[in-house]
Length: 490
Image (cartoon, rainbow, N blue to C red; front, side):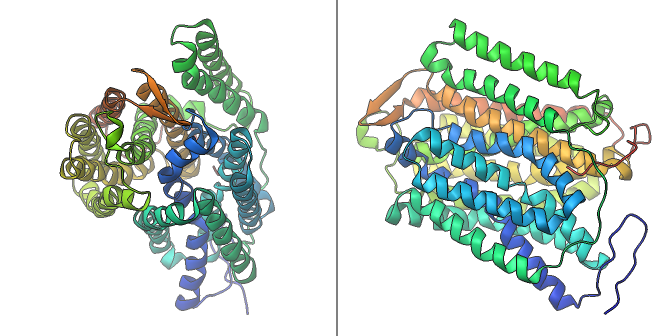
């Protein structure tokens, strides 16, 4: 069988039938599904994890994943360019599996978080999957294939809470981690056997120091935010951690001017539409991850505790509140894409951010019944689908084609940082009115959740403001954004 040479800069690939192409795509998608399931399986388990380990710092269960993912994704993407994307996908899958085992067996919360951190490092699979699809599948089906990857991840937001809830109710929180191990092991073996490796290799330099500085600065900052409720919001150690973290991050920005291939292109950040789009991504992901944490904690709380909220539902029943949000989001995504083509991406971002803000206000003010909660949830789903669908279109239209890989990586990085900050800030915010210990579990007051939902409303509003500012720009591919000498995949 002869290979089919393509245009310069692309991999040579063997001709594939349409059926085999979609079979390979299905395997890649199944492996990528470890990413959303690492969130959707675990968020309903947060109350049980907090109770098991006797900790109020349960926000770190989500924070550590997004933090490690943000720092490791650009490095893993480059390693895929150097050594092969399939090879690095399998390495990432093995790291994810090791993290799943450690999280399931960890005797202490600290070791549990190490396991979650390993899962975060393994979740860099996504950036490799997009590259592998581009390299091995026929060019004619690549746009459809990329769409299937996004759809598959959307479907898991519906199935994840249902399957995860069942596992938690019947096997405890460890059940979701054994399920993740089984998933990544079975699919990983199938990918190793059937999916071909890309023939494309590029020389690239790894900005390991940049990733370490970024991770350290973000960790110290978020550690200070997470401990603020315990130490005091104006305590010296809180101010030291927050100030120190910000100082390290400032130093990281200075350092990023020196490597030939940095984690981010600071020159690109000086281009207004790019900076606004990245900021909007951070605000949207802040809402997405924080919202997915707050809802299970809220609805699973026993109303008999007298805290003024909660429905006392099981982990499986949490799906009643989250699945409709996922369905609306999946519908709003393609609809948002349609309107992006008709009226441009910036107005769609304005609508999505406004819907996120309105839905969060509704959750803050109307949460005494399931019907009231569902109304806010549906509005949130409308905002998430619209906003997340338009952000990639915005970044693609604001940079030249040659730098879209770099810009896409920066979009992922800003979103990951927004997720990490959001998950940690939510725990700090809900604890502001005080924490009540019931047994070994920390319980929060209704006022704390109200504050948290209003914080999500502010973040959604800021995303809408970024959209309004972008409507003043001519959102097209700009020629004035510098193109680096070597392309970085992130």
